[in-house]
Length: 302
Ligand SMILES: Nc1ncnc2c1ncn2[C@@H]1O[C@H](COP(=O)(O)OP(=O)(O)OP(=O)(O)O)[C@@H](O)[C@H]1O
Image 1 (cartoon, rainbow, N blue to C red):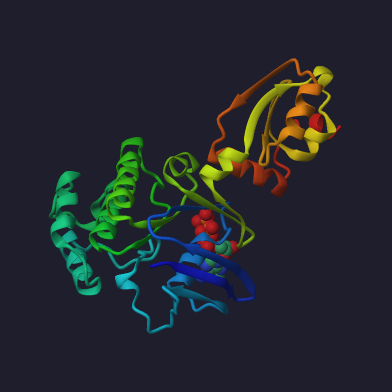
Image 2 (cartoon, rainbow, N blue to C red):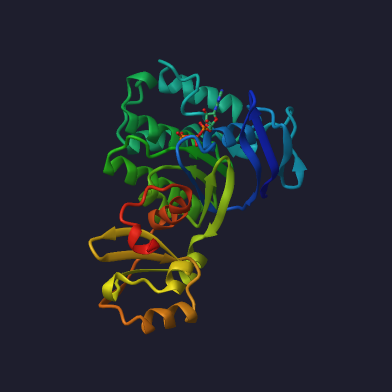
């Protein structure tokens, strides 16, 4: 089973908030969706699930185009974290609603997770902390036994331990049940540890679609100090400066090759070392082109 979006577009009022989005979401794949505030992540999820009717484009599940009559509850789990009906309901009531709606929902597995995380069974949704609510959402998602799970900001406001718990639940489900996840998050460190793939959303459309392992094979991050602060032209052309600390430049090359290697060697830098490339670096690399936020970039531009 695959989920395919083709040229999905959604306008709200006069504003296009999802623009021409196409990608195929494959079984077992953990995909991170990142983008600055307002990029359109939540609207994309709502449009994918036909909570908003797309203006154009299609969503297909296994080559079947979804329609307003399509029942997603055997294939995709999505609970809008900003807009759901949970209110002050007790957990048992929420779970029983899920048994009615999701045909494969397992109450046993839901309560097992709740007990595992020592959340009192008699709790009511609105009386729980953010971390507990996030864990319960995960428990509901996993107990629904669907192959595709959308999570909108699952780490938001969670402490380190709660983040690790949610992360572990995602990793286990992908490993044991081949569950696919599409996860929007501003917590790039957390996403980095679990994502196979990352979609970078900018101005409501997908600017980049990276398989992280492949990207890391091709890309390189260095920190370097050039003699007299003179940055070789080839480096300026191929690399993106993501940080400046005094004379030390951190540069990311998304496509590192021999020409760049030679340009670096020829420049005989005062100091140079490789650094691990993180998702934050990748995001910053795209953001540098996006904004003028980088301080000290005069070094690079002179
Ligand atoms: N119901 C709505 N009415 C009007 N504008 C909307 C509505 N929903 C979303 N928008 C606009 O669409 C754009 C995308 O919003 P969305 O919430 O999808 O972004 P996001 O990437 O999820 O942002 P964040 O990271 O801040 O959660 C924003 O400019 C937002 O103001």
